[in-house]
Structure formats: C-alpha cells, structure tokens
Image (cartoon, rainbow, N blue to C red; front, side, top):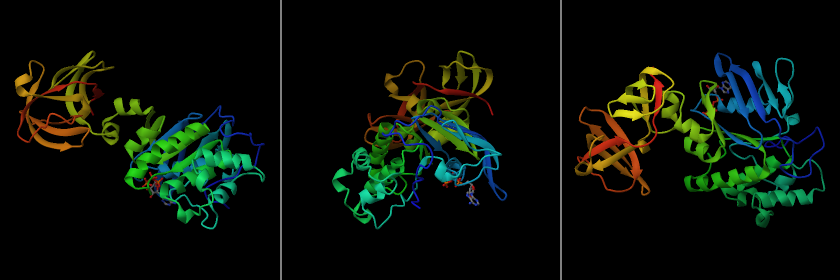
Length: 365
Ligand code: ATP
C-alpha cells in the first residue's frame, strides 16, 4: 500500500479539495503511550482547530512523532481518547484502523514510488479512477503541472515534497499530518518551502498537524503552536502568544533567546536590577523577569539620560538586518540586545542600557 497515504474508504468523497466537513478538528484527550519503561506520551491533551495548521514543537525525544502516530492510528494509546472530525477513533473501547481515519500523512523522506512519475504518484492515491480533473487541480495546487511526467529521481527535494503533499491531499483527507517535513531540505530551500507548503495547506483548507523541533519553522508556518515537553503539551496558542507570554522559564528559553532576572512583582510594575518596568502581573512578590533581546535598547553613553544603566559591550554578532550584542552591567549582570544592524558596537564600548519593549513576569521558581 502507498506508504504516505491512507485512501478514503468510508463516506462518499466531496467533489472539491477543502470542501470536507471540518467542523470539529482533532482532539486528543489525556493520551498516554509507553514503550516498555519509556513514557513517550504522558497524559497529553491537544486540539487542532479545523482548517488551521498546528505545530507540535519540542526538543528531541519529547514525544512529538509518537503523538502524530497515535493520531494517524499507527500506534494504539495506552490511555485517553482521540477524536477526528467528531468521530472517536481511539479510546478504551474503540480503535479505528489507520486507513479508515481519513488522514493523509507526509513522512520525513516523502516515500515516493520510484517507478511512477509525478502524475502516477499522485493518481495512485486518488480514491476512484477517472478523476482527471481532480488530478489536474492537485498538480496545479502544488505547482507541478509542467513537470507531471518527471520521475522522482528527476525532481529536487522541494518538488518531491510537493508531490508527497499532493498525494496526501489526493484522498481528500479530513486532516494532514506531517513529520518534520523540511528536515531533508537544505537551508535556503527550506525557507522557500515553508511559505509554499503553508500556502498549499491554507488553499486546501485542511486541518493540519506538523511535527518540528525548529522554533523558527513552527512560528513561521503554524497558526497555533503546541509546545511539548516530556510527553505533554505545556503551552498551546498562536505563535505570538507562546513567544510573547511563555508559561514558564523553560518554555521562554526553548522558544528563543531570553535573559532572566530576579525581581519583585508589584501588580502594575516589576522592580528589578534594570529599575521599575511597566508590566501588569497577576501576583505580587518574588518574580522572574524574562527579557527578550529585542526588548533591550542600547545607546551611546553620551546620549543617555535617566532610566539607563551603564554597561560595557562584551561581544557583537552582525546578521545584516540586525545585530546581537552582549553587554555586562557594572554589577556583573549580562544581557543581550537584538536590534537593527547599526550603530556598529565594538567590544569594550561603554553603553547605556534600558528595557524598551515587552517583558514577561513569572513567579519565582
Ligand atoms: P525526535 O524529535 O528526536 O524525532 P520526538 O519528540 O519525535 O523525537 P518520539 O520519537 O515520539 O520523540 O519518542 C519519544 C520517546 O519514546 C523517545 O525516548 C523514544 O526513544 C521513545 N520511542 C519512540 N518510539 C519507540 C519505539 N517504537 N520503541 C521504543 N521506544 C520508542
């Protein structure tokens, strides 16, 4: 059987891509899965909203692929339940076989048939013969019409990925699952394919869950990110929310660069070594102030007035569009600033430092 697709076998197919009933999305409720003593997934709950792209993001070994395989029906949960489009596909009494779940899967290596051309690879997954119009629409959707007669070995990595995506969409699935879809592409192609794949999935209007350990990838493609740690989802929300308001220090540091200072939350502001910072807090008392480098402003010392702390530049990395500058306050506290690529700071420069942007205030651990 085609390894990247589970052909539709139940209710009649809607005629067009994206017109499937996507009222319900995917719901995992307290699912667990162990392999011997290894708890791969431990009471995980997750919702993938209809028509949205949800990223399962977490470090290696946190259970992302196992979760995807549980949704696909390639693993059986030890506990918990999974619903796809309102239908329970796994709980303590039911288990719907993978080929009956109406999900399309794109594996890391795309798993194309080497002896079939592009058209043949996609046509294989069409649930009925004589769907030339549908095949042409799929080829158009993924931008492969002009090379439909090429064999897989004549395709670039990005083109192979688009064939795999079209093949997964061919069975008109209720959901698409992608496992590290960009990992075998080189860096420049990866960036291009991110926006292409996002566009294809949004045009198809299909509920999507994709697995990645790459924060930037998750933030640039997903409508919603579920951050995973130790077999659980620790935070879930739109990219801006999980990046801007992480639930704890681990999540803050996993999602991007962050410096964490001790402070005292006072309700409307937080007091820390950088002075009082405006930040509404839901608690008062000992706190951790999480500061992203883009919220740290540096100025030449001669230009600064009140509100700045004096510091010395330790290091600078120039990225063209911006620069990351590490500074040390006279107290020894080190901070990073990520701002525009000018002015050019040099090691040893004396600078004024202030907070200029949002910070996150968490209870002290
Ligand atoms: P990665 O990003 O490295 O692919 P992941 O987050 O996808 O990791 P999983 O592949 O889901 O993590 O694995 C979670 C844990 O379960 C790991 O410790 C892994 O070694 C273990 N595991 C996964 N599948 C099996 C299996 N079939 N047999 C035994 N252990 C397994």
